Length: 172
Image 1 (cartoon, helix red, strand yellow):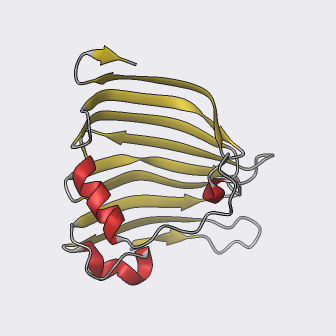
Image 2 (cartoon, one colour; image 1 turned 90 degrees about the vertical axis):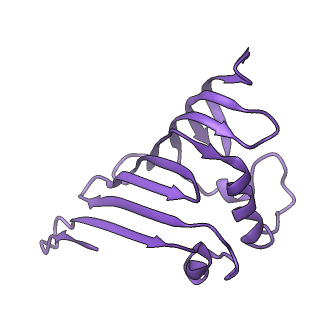
């Protein structure tokens, strides 16, 4: 990790670049909550910046066992209410390998019984989503050119536009 940080108490801030890699993701089990036996490789880089209005992780570039992800996360902490903007892009998602890695992570968190909204999403601030995935392979069907733009509010997707191709024939 390398970068600069501000020492002005009235205007905290930093600008850092971070990167890490693991030839076998299980070696990061203590940080990521995975089984130490989890296979798959992981490489990640990002630029983290904080100023008096937002915290941004941009230039995110992640390779997880054959799947590539890039994009940005911005938390507008000075906004009312706080808002999180998520921009995610991928040229290729290997669903089989991702699901295998998730299975190796261990048992899912216990639900609070409320099935209407995922329990982990209820405490999130409003989220603006901009997701584009060029190809998702390895699931029950192949999906290409998947795009989702919308908002996540109180654990529910609101005002969303979704498009994509299923098996190169059916258009969403």
